[in-house]
Length: 197
Ligand code: DGI
Ligand code: FE
Ligand code: FE
Image 1 (cartoon, protein in one colour):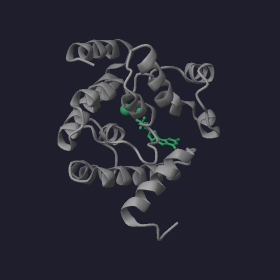
Image 2 (cartoon, helix red, strand yellow; image 1 turned 60 degrees about the horizontal axis):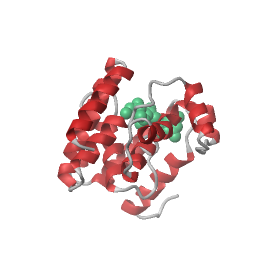
Image 3 (tube, helix red, strand yellow; image 1 turned 135 degrees about the vertical axis):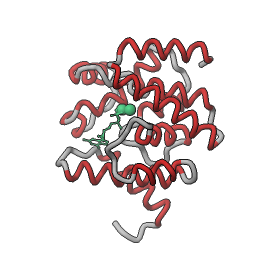
Image 4 (cartoon, helix red, strand yellow; image 1 turned 180 degrees about the vertical axis):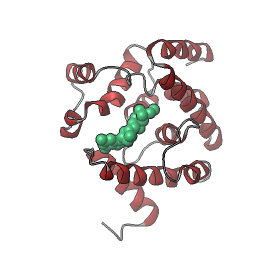
């Protein structure tokens, strides 16, 4: 994706997203670009994935379900209960189909940006972390610590985010997708050993 194509994507997103979501999109793209520069990832790929990660966020739930059903994208029990989670998978599909992204790593970064996945690539981790820490986010606990950690230990930042997300979801009684738990377990075992279950 050339810089000129990136500016096309920006225009597209400004058309389909409300202003708050569009601000978030730009902030994720630039935060991801900075993390990419820090860790030696392709900055252009990071910008593209950041720009498109929420391209399906403004679609109604029925549309998210119908895109996934039609394209035989697997839908879990939790996703049927909370179809908004599907904006990541549907967004990845649209990034390829509608926005002509062919790089599989970019498509995966969009696909996995909400739940993460065990063994994420560098780009996937960058998008996962950028989505959570972009400057417009205000309400999360440990945000300052996570923002600092992101530039020195990306895996640790992923773990802190998953820990806080799971706590939040548990406290609010939300359905929790298995992948979110599996991703947390994976990074906890990787970083802190597997002494606890
Ligand atoms: O689309 P965004 O709001 O920018 O961010 P996102 O795609 O990471 O979605 C954020 C929400 O997703 C956040 O409130 C946490 C939630 N989330 C992540 N994993 C799960 C989840 N929500 C439920 N119900 N279950 C999960 O496993
Ligand atoms: Fe999202
Ligand atoms: Fe987002």
